[in-house]
Amino acid sequence: MKGLGGLFGQKIDHPLANPRELKQTLDALPKDNAFKALDEIAGWLESLPSVSEFPVDRLYDAVRQLEEAAYPSLRRLAREYLHTPRLNKPDEKRLWAINQGFWTLLAAAYERCVIGMSEPGKPAEALKPLQPALYARLLAAYGAIQKWEQFHYGPTPADLWGRIGKVVQQAETAGVATKSVSLGGALGVTSPTQEFQKLVVFQAASMDGLLPFEIDIAEHLIAHFLPNFVFTADALHDSVYWLDLQLAQPPLRLARKPVQVSPSQRFFKPGPAHAEIRALLDSLSRGDDLPAEINLGAQFQTKVLLPVLQHLALYLAPIPPQRKHDRHRVKHRMSVLNGLVNAFVAFSGEFGGRPAGLHMESWVVENVSRGGFGAVVPNLPADWLKVGALLAVQPDGGENWLLGIVRRYHRTTGNEARVGIEALARQVVSVEAHVRSASSYAAVAGIPALLVLDPQPSGETLVVLPPATFDLRENLEFTRDGRRHALAPVALLERTADYELARYRLSVIG
Image (cartoon, rainbow, N blue to C red; front, top):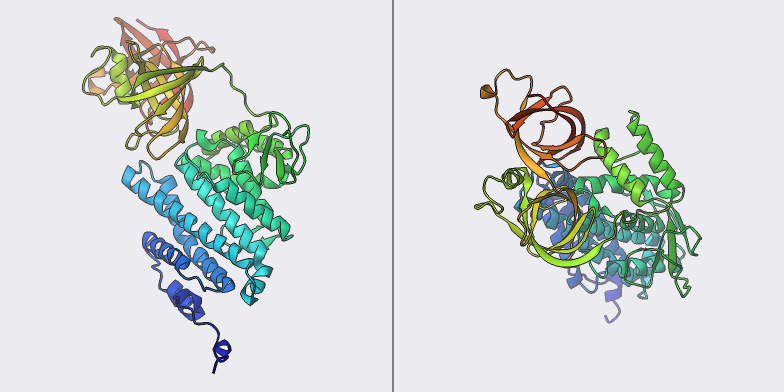
């Protein structure tokens, strides 16, 4: 009886190891509750490490099917996260945590499959023909972790690039790195090398200057233009970025060639992709439609796409942007007020240099330049801090307020972040404007606005307005220092859910 166990195969104490039970598990997943479906799938992924005898070929098949079953729920929750206006903080954290948690568990499960392929036996041999798909799926999972961490503005897991480099080297050693595979779903036809290159370009694109939904659009655009980026094993005279697959560090700008040459080094430049990005930007700016072959995952208006393309054209250029102004290190605190309403009170001057009753943040300024400053946010605000946030800031010991906009945002820990703030204006006044066509001020509510007094190169005036206020057909009017002034609209420069920034021609009318 000693050898009879081998006739029936090894008994595995896990439901997913049995094809019939695996199918029943997938069929029983909720179809109308994305949260519950993903929670159940995550639970199954979390249960896999406890089963040491799971044959690697069946483990891969189970993980693959769990991933594919999760796609509809992942898409639904990602849309909710990215496109729900004014998502409150608890819902935002819940949506982020379940998505980021799923991809983290999925990557760990595929990593276990990679380890299992090195073990002797028939299961590992049976999985070897599927190596290209396994490596591609694992690298795509790393890409999803990278993207969701960027939605949260970091920090990226410290070991992620070390894990990426290890997998790429294993795929190259196995001779399958460039082998195309059809994975269906969101991945389509891809290869381990393509998934790796997406990770590199995404990192190089400096996504911390974009909003989450813009980051998602940028990722789709990178995938479309990917074949025209140039990756080499040797440093070229015009290489822009480099990385070493054996080092746990992201791609770095190539200021100079590495001192030591290594087979594990990779180099990257935008190549023809930059010209194609510029061509699409110019085409959409002329009013052309988005080409049908570009899949962005959803339909977007041209005005939404243009800032993303402008960002990619800038940061994925043959010569990446350099700092316009010298940066000087400092260390002092500043008070921060968020939003148009609070800024209106601060710049009105009616309540003194530090208006009482307003919630003020205290941030630490680390560096300043003519264009703005960088600051450390020690205790992250509840929900308002994001790229594009309007700020009124006042250095400690000063009386004057400055107007700024958050342009870059990167979380360094769970409770601390670094922000880059554009100094929009140093001289600002609060005014109550009215539409000039209104026959009587008494019948029309005033519009709280911030009038920038700093001279503009165009000779026009910058005005910050509440959302949905700017109209090219409507002049505004306000009274200041006993005199009536008119504002003739020129152009809308920036629109967010919290304010609008526009150019006007200012004149005195009485």
